[in-house]
Length: 459
Image 1 (cartoon, rainbow, N blue to C red):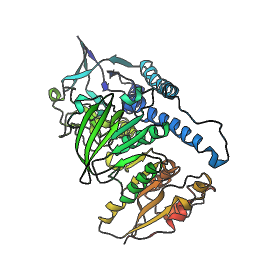
Image 2: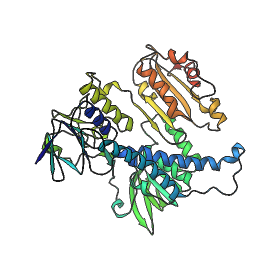
Image 3: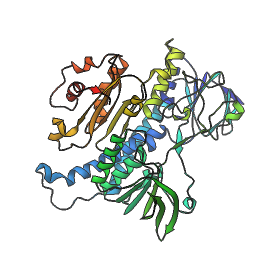
Image 4: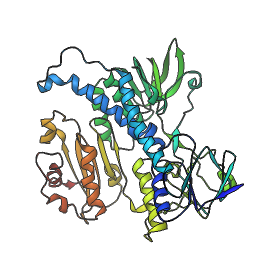
């Protein structure tokens, strides 16, 4: 027997539940399919739990620095990893349960628990039930990639999901992967008390960033005792007693790194391999991402792909923006597009990196005059007052239009102050608007107008 709906949403990550809310409010009958955890990656093993762990790690870091601020804490600082995990779990549970409760009590919606697979372009099987709808929205997210490294299949290793179950302190943690996930976990566990080594194949950490940003991030981590190895090749993994050994060639020299635990953080794959996309005729690219147009429509009429599975963004905020785009086009007669949005993201090491727009390297390839200004955090009063002076601010401006092209804010509160730049970019206002604004003292943001006053031509 087939159940008929106006719309089927597969997956309950950041975009799916909100879209269900808009569709049901518009009088549509909606089926919601979730095979495992309500809330998707962000809620269960992404943003929310990792930032909860980052907060615990920062508390330990600040406690150890108490004497710098004139605060004496008797005895050595210790971290109870079971309590750290319990705190994280309680935060995750509240969020996940909130999403599930919202969907189950949503009028005109029906929740189906199980794995959804296409039978044809408009029919989805969930366990032994068939669901049919003229509109189907795929919000299936992604999972950790497993690289092809000799010996990896013979040793136990962690990824971003299994790290969420760790309730002990690894004596020595090896991290393969020098980008966002690897660096956040690397710094976090160093602050908890582990010895940490980060191994990166490329010549520098977070390779998508400018060299000066990558160098500063490496310095921040190494200042805290994280060992960083770059230009690593010829990987091999071996079990050594109760631990693990990673053998690599770095800068032409064979190196062996011994650790108690191994975290593999080398990227993500979309959860599209087992959806039966071939039965629906839905196209994917060579990496498995569902191909979509500028309004997130697939090649099959009435089927959309939103969130991480479409390859048009790998962040919670891009997934939520996907929902906004789809809802605006379907329900509001407002033709919004993916190409309207400005690239923006944060790296949540401490201090954090806030990023938007293009990099200096990209700006140099534009072939037109560009202005740039930088300011070290040592010259930001708020950072000095807090004894957090690592990092710098950098901004890029089109010399002719005076529009801001991009910014890198690596430093205390960089994850927040980047939004003042993003808002001006969306407004398509010249940089002089924010340069002439009166900001509040003492803040980090107050230095943005000062920074813009230092713009000079890129040499």
